[in-house]
Each structure stands twice: as structure tokens, then as C-alpha cells.
Image (cartoon, rainbow, N blue to C red):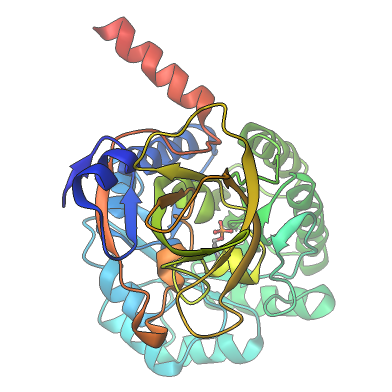
Length: 395
Ligand SMILES: Cc1ncc(COP(=O)(O)O)c(C=O)c1O
């Protein structure tokens, strides 16, 4: 894959016809190092967020060995990673998926949120006694951009009953939850863990594993999430209050926080109509989240010099397909002189961007290139500075 210093250098050299994903593996590696150093347990990467080999390689290089997988195709992929431990954390799996995960890929770690799913797992694994079973509990989202509580998770007396039944069936019993993706403040984890504490007491079970899920925020234009260190402090404090022993092993499953900043999308302006720009990727492509969930990705004009004094103007984007919902309201603040043929770098699209892209209308294909420069916005500025300091000291 070609490598450039920046999106501007790439545009100067290639003038690409289709969108380009600019991959910054160093940013994923830095995020992974931060989590490995600051989370008091296993860090499992949520594979669904982005399965680019360049990012997976960077995460692996930083020490990530646990992966949260949601389907057999993800397992097939992730199983090729040396020494990987796979956790099949989808609470509703087909019998075939359980059977194949267990017998073909040696997966021993499964999430569930119902007695039916427990029965399925036990039947399809031949009542294997070596399993780690994670009961997914429903927790209330707080300040989350994508709440997940309506679909999965069990609570109250039913959850306590399921914990007791799972305890009898497995080697290691865990609880897992997800506070919702892009959770801006740590209080969601505190109340989730307090609920977990009540549930453990109600069920009277000994817990071997506790997974606080994903949901850790990345950074976009309109949001100032709490620093990740505040999330770690809140989780550690709340875990201290839980009725669990010292041997209970913690895990987290970040997707977004590990890869969002590690990719940009570079699009071309194919037409300008007033303050609307027609660009060559959109809601059916890598910019799904900008269209459907209102994610406010950072943008900049790249590939030609811009007068620093030029005023920025609010633009909205139309994507390339014929569909009216292929629209991204923004506002995206760009130089007023922007015109057809210009290129825009849309930053921090690494989480769920390429993973969601479809080929509707024949669009959605992209090229890729490695970029050396820094992400447009970062949650890891202090880590980057500390690492630069270390490099200077060693030089
Ligand atoms: C079970 C599970 N774990 C982890 C994640 C990753 O979440 P995030 O990208 O918000 O960290 C998801 C996302 O949907 C999920 O469903």
C-alpha cells in the first residue's frame, strides 16, 4: 500500500478518482497502548468496528490479543491472528454459528442473555465444561450517541436466575454489558456497575469475569467527551465497591476508541450548489454515521493551498447515489472558495466507517493509503506527547 505524509501529499501525487481511506496505523497503536497501560484487565478489540489488516496489525503490535467477535465470518478472520483469544459476544447466535465457533475455531467464550441461548450453547458445545459464559445485562445508557439497551440484555429476577443457571454450567462465569457507543461521560459505567453489584447479591453467585464492554468515546467536532482517564478512574472505583473477589478478571471491549482516529476519508467535490457540496462518498458509503446518526466529523480542504485568513463557511454534503437520504447535514465548516474538483479530508472515520460501506448504485468502492501525520482530532494527545518525550530521551 502506498504511503504519504498527509492527505494533501496524497492528493498532490494521485488526484484519486474514487474516495481514499487514509489509514494511520500509528494512531490505532497509540490508542491500544493507552488502553493496555490504563485499563486494569484484558483489552478485547471489538472486531466489528474496523477489520483493516493494517489496523489489526497495529493493535496486535501494541499487544492486543483478545477480540470480541460477532459472527462466523469475523471468527474466520480473527482466528488467523496468532495467539488470539476470541470472545463470541453476540447474545443471539445461530446453532450453526455456535457449533462452528466451538468445533472449528476452538472458541470457548460466549455471551448470552436468555435461558434459550444458554440451552443452545450447551447443546451445540456438547455440554462442554470449559466454557466462559458472559451474561449480558441490560444497563441504562447515559450521554450515549448510540444506546444499545433496547435490543440486548437481561435484568432483575430473570437475570439473577440466568446467572445461577449459567454458573452451574460453565467453568468461568462473567457478566457483560454495553453502556452504548460514544458515551461521553463515565457516569454510565458507574451506574451500570452499581446495578451489576445488586445483581450479584440477588443471584448469590461468585463471578470470575467482568466485562465493562465498549462505549468509550472518540472525539468529533461537536463534542467534548470526558478524558478517557476519567472513565478508567470511575470504573476502578465502582469495581472496588463490587462484591467480587480479587481473582475476578476484568475485560473491556472498545471498538470506536481504538480505531476512530486511525482513519480519514478523502472525498472529491463533484459539484457545488450554493452551500451544498456533492461529494463522492456518502450515507451508503463510509459516511453512514454522518448521515444517519448526525456524527460531526472534522473536515479540511486538502490538496491545494488555502489562505489561512479565508473565512470558513457552513456546508452540507450530498453523497453520490441517486437517493435523497444520501445527505449529510453537517454543518461542515470549509473555506468559502471550495469548488468542484477540490478534495476534502473527513477525519476520524475509522470506527464503523468502512465497515458499513455498501456498493449501492455502484458507489462505495475506495482506495487506501497509509498516512504518517497525526489524526485531525485526538483523545490521546497526552500519550502522544509522553511517547515523543520518551523518544527524545532515548535519542
Ligand atoms: C458486544 C459489543 N462489544 C463492543 C462493542 C464496541 O462498542 P464501541 O465501538 O462503542 O466501543 C459493541 C458495539 O456495538 C458491541 O455490540
